[in-house]
Amino acid sequence: MQREAYAAARTISLKLHDYFARHREEALRRGERELAPLPDAETIEAIIDAAFWASLRREEGYVPKISLAFLSPHQAIHPLILDRPLPLGAAALARVSPAVERPGIHLGVWRDQGEMCVWGTTHGIPILCFVLEVAAPGLLVVKHHSGDESRKFVNVAVLEGDQIKIVDECASNQPGCPALLSSLLGFDSPASWIQSVNTMVKLAVSMRAHGRGGSLLVVPSNTGQWRESIVQPIPYAVSSPYCDLAPMNDSVVAAVAGLTAVDGAVVLTDRYELLGFGAKIVRRKGWPQVEQVTMTEPVEGARPALVHPEQLGGTRHFSAAQFIRDQQDAVALVASQDGRFTIFEWSSREEMVHAHRLDALLL
Image 1 (tube, rainbow, N blue to C red):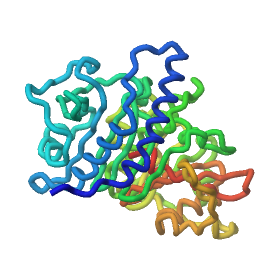
Image 2 (image 1 turned 180 degrees about the vertical axis):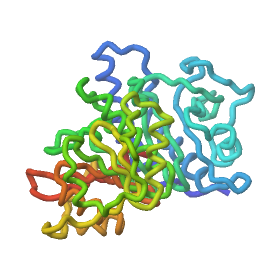
Image 3 (image 1 turned 45 degrees about the horizontal axis):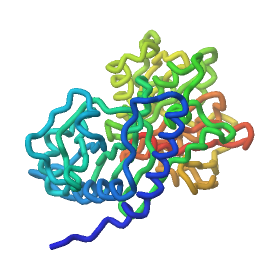
C-alpha cells in the first residue's frame, strides 16, 4: 500500500535547495574547494519524506534518532560502506537506527542507478553537506557543516508536523541581538569574546539536553546587587567561587548545566565563577512586577510580540523575566521540559525585558 507523502517536504524542498546553492556559490567565491554536493529539490524532498515517516515508527519500542547526510561514499572520511545499499525508506531507516543514534554518526545517502539509497555510515562530512536529523517523532532539523571546528553545524530549518520554521539568517543584524544568538546562527564572533560565547552555547545545549528544565543566571562579578533579587541564603551556595568553565572543558560544562535540573536557578558570574544553585528568585524590594516582555524568535516571518512572561512557559520564565527586570545588567537562560529555550536580557532601547526564543537553533 502506497503511503501518503509528507506535504511539508515538498513545501520546503525548493527553498532549501536555493539556500544551499547560494551558500555554495559564496563558499566557492571565498576559495573553498572541498565542498559537499548540492542536492536538488527532488532529492531533498525524498530525504525529508523518508525521515519523517521513519520518525513515527518504533524499533523494539524505541523512537528512531538518526542523522542523514547527502554525499557519496568517496566524499566521506573513513566511511563504513555496506556491501548492499539500503533503500531510502521509513522501514529501512527505522531498522538501522539503533546502530547510528550516537552523536556524530551519519547515514550516507546517495543515488545508486537512479534510486535513492543509504550506502553506509560516516563520521566526517564536508562543508555545506546537507544533513537531516530526526530529533523526535515528527520533529526534523535541517543543518549543515559550517567548517568551524568550535561549532560544527548551523541549523537551517525545523519541521514539526505541518509546521515549518526557517532560521532567519539576518536575525543577528537586529538591534540588541545577544552575542550567544549570533554564535548559534553560525556567524563569526570577535576573537575577544568567541571563547566565552562558545562556553555559553555549550551550556545552553547541555541545559536543554537533560530534559528537566532549568534556569541559569549570569550576574556581574563586580557587584553583589543581584543578591537583592535572590532569597538568602542560597540553598546550595558554593563556599569559594568555582571557576573552571573558561577553558571550555566539556565535562565541566555538562556538570554545571546538570545543576540546573535542581529546583531553583544556577548563579554564575560573567567570569564563569559558579556561586551556587537552587537559588530562589524574588522581586527586588521597591521594584515593579514585570507585566510584559518583548518576545522574538530568529525564524523567517516571526514578528516581535508583547506577551506576559508566563505565556513563554510558566513560573520559571516569569521569575527569570522578573530577575532581569530588577537586575538589568544580568542575563537569564531558561530551558523548558518540552525543549523550549529562552534568553532573557534587558533592552535599553525598548526599556523592557526582551525574551529571545532559541528553540530552532538548539535542536
